[in-house]
Amino acid sequence: MFQRRQFLMSSAAGAAAAISAFKASAKGLAFDVEPRGTTGILERLPRLDLESAQDFMTGYRVFINGPLNRAAIARAESILKANGLTAETPMSMADTIKLMAPDPEMMLYIHNWENTQRAMWATVQHEAHKNADAYTEEMDRAMKAGPGTIELDARLEPPAYTKHEIHIQPGGYVGDPFAGYIYLHGQNVVFTGGNFQDKAQVSLAGAVPTPASGKVRRVLEQGCSIGQLTMALKLRFPEAEVWGDDVAAPMLRYGQVLAVDRGIDVHFVQQLSEKSKFPNNHFDIVTNNLVFHEVTTEGARGIIAEAFRTLRPGGVFYPIDLFTGSPKPKTAYQQFKAWQDYRWNAEIWRMEYTALDMPEEMRKVGFIVNEKGPPARGGTDRNIMGTKPA
Picture 1 (cartoon, rainbow, N blue to C red):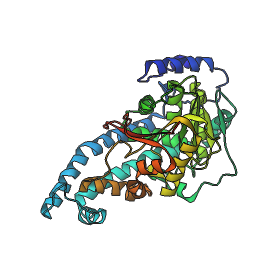
Picture 2: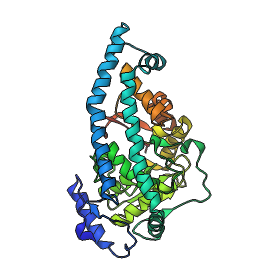
Picture 3: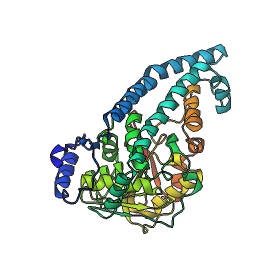
Picture 4: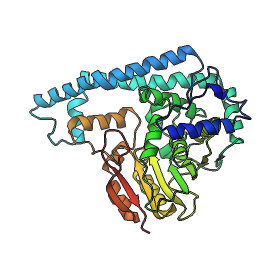
């Protein structure tokens, strides 16, 4: 089985560690569901027609994000000019929407973007449900396998704010038992084919700063979904105990499938990141990726507070999100795009996040904040980071 696997990562050391782990954990994986094998670490879709459909949507997404987006920008500038305004004219969100939303060219862009998003999810969801027994067995058996562990909480009732269909993924993260399968293949379209080998997560893991002492014994990823960054962190810090928590059991169950299949020793726990079970002063590093724009302001404050509580003195908090390394929307078109995300992509907490003062919220709980930390996301030259006073 593992002769087919080549762990293609940007980090040669990470790849070597992963391949070694794969070989060490080869026994007991007869339950692994791979009808068409893998390409590197990516399990191929079960049928060629599905793969072709996703490939088409990936290519179309490139067109939407490129030429169609540029056409929308040009149209937005024309609308502003016709109203005696420029791209830099200060405008409220309400005024921006009033000007641009009725325009057919602007809405053509949104229509194409949204329907591609819906199609990429639906294609995989339909296939997962057709093969429900096999995929359920795969997840059930992975629950009992290692390396690593998974702990689910049957008594945990996900809060209402977590139950919407985030990114218009059908069922969201908590409402479909195969949410992890759906998410993995859908996000490959979102990344326009550039993340088949978890390249983005490996890059983010490489950007995470370490405490001044250099000691990294325990690491936590809050809101880890299917654990791609969690596993990348383990490859970066192979001697550390690495944890990922999330409220969504379906995502964690699939994350465990991936971790067992790859032989990566990480630990998953189902809980609210803002109400974790971890002890005080426990972790050397706490990080997260694209979590804050998915939660309420109250949830965001709780997540920050938990990061502070569970970090040891001198530990580092490194949140990665839309505005932790980029300016908030300023131009009219940037505001229009934020509204698009909120209105058409089920990012229902996007406006709350846009209004959140992350550095100030981090200072409130006691962090020493560096607003020009090492950059994480592409296209940025900085990232907010916090240090717990020693």
